[in-house]
Image (tube, rainbow, N blue to C red; front, side, top):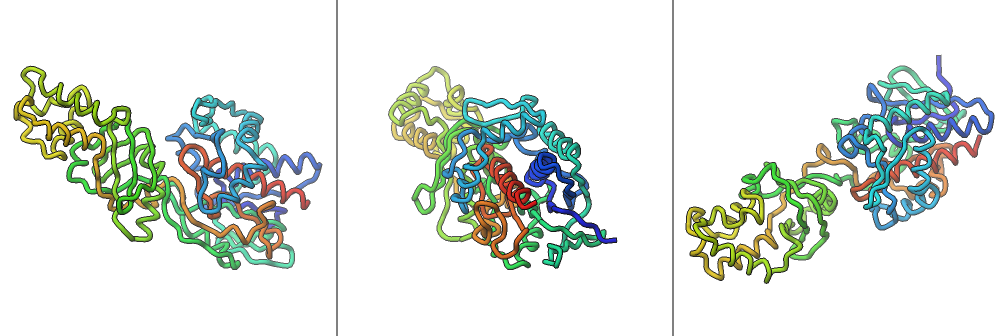
Length: 417
């Protein structure tokens, strides 16, 4: 027997669950009986949300602004104007998630548990009468006389209104897939090229592999044919394939875009001691070379992690490491300082969608009204979240776009009831 719903939400991730809560509240406030159905292809909702912030869930960032977004930043700005980070904090407080704002603007649940955020969303939606069906992917959306017919393995579902929030292609292990875009492209929507963002970098590993597992607090720049594309400060993690860590992933979008275009040579430039100027650093290395009984292998121990220091010496060509440190020439000291301040590592690519947190690119938002997120030709059809061509920087900005776009779409849907 065909199933009917007033609104079907396709995708039970962050956007879908938040929209379900807003729609449930609107129905209660309007004292209307509305059937709200969430269709989720996975065995459970919110799997990707559980992994955000390494399980702590960076809910939002109070500094969210147009400059933090890419693809269609104007749309992100429009969403933020309707639903700000402050309003997001109020919403989560209202469903039982007390929040803590850190000095850098990042907002986390007081419990620092992503599971608590997911549980609160699920419980609120259920309390408002929202029905959720897991293991139920929507494979097609077809306009019909009564609105839309959604094809699922368990039979068709008819809905007056449909919100598509299927996420993106990033993190397939957590449910990410490019299949969801087809629901909208089959209805005439355009899709811009997809590429990973907030992702680890693959690099030449000649020296990097020797320091895998070590984290440094430094600065990284990406240079394309000698021109700086982006710079970030923070934690850098050396791996067996290249570079990771918050600072690296924060500017990785540029590397992924380069990888897609395949033009020019991309280089990661590390400054391991950004607080030191070249003259001071060089003088300190000269002084360290005069410490009694030291060999080169211990020249930088105490200034840098021992293995990192030894690798720096090899990169600078200052060997062998069992050589007495007091044999260093002024030129060699300068070369070592130059590598510490500007270690150039060729970038070969990224870890792809498998390692990415976010998808750059997606459905072109121009087909949707920016005030309501409803399709301009297909009335009653909405889209929100990562499926659209909007992606944010690392630090809670992508989840804020999820919450904001969910609110905007839900508000428009309920206004039509």
